[in-house]
Length: 293
Ligand code: ADP
Image (cartoon, helix red, strand yellow):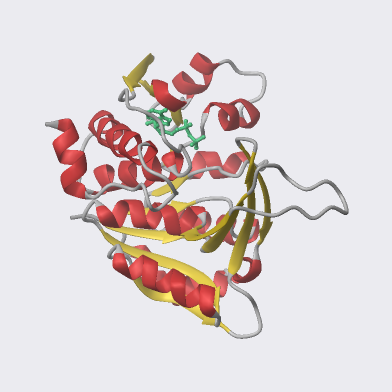
């Protein structure tokens, strides 16, 4: 069992299904409301914990109903929540999703996620320092991400950065982290002017590029390795990337090779696309082992 710290976002996803989205100034009747825990940080923590790792979530929620739901959801999947701060005077982060005509429109309110400061990190640093792997995404303040990357680099704690949602980042971050896990689109933005092979070969063993149902590409020496995805019927791809990240971290924290960790994570992510919801579809350990056997 590996020890992982995730420093990231906790959001409640509030999804309204409707036949079509309203025009400006218009009201339409919806079909149903789905309230589900999300946020890339919490999702990745849940994915790794369900696979049996000891996972600590470091983040912030508001002292409100959504904050309580979030903590319950994390605990149910086995995530340790001792370092999730419950803050007064700020709302739990929310994502307001309209699902209509086969497409999502989303407004995110960062809420308490914007309060994940270097001080919050310092308070959890004993647990962060002893991690086999620290996981980061782009849904907390960029200054805090930079602070964590610097401190972990100084202390030689491996960091995995999932650069999503995409934002330009300092090149120094790419140099200092152990793994960076963009999807194809994020990789193209991050390494402008380089083709896929150049990106992977010049960051061998560091850039783990997910390519949807095709699986994953990464560099090993001067070779590009393709680890194929699993063919499964697709119900909902929400959370596939988060499941992949949580499971890849789990594999590495347990001491699997990069290639074995990717295969393990491709299986976990494929299982997640067979079910609705981000966390709803995340598999437990026995399901992934069954798929790989
Ligand atoms: P993101 O969801 O972040 O955009 P990708 O679409 O690249 O990232 O998906 C991440 C991983 O999820 C892939 O590397 C693959 O393992 C898995 N995956 C995604 N879509 C599918 C699919 N349709 N079938 C099987 N596996 C999938």
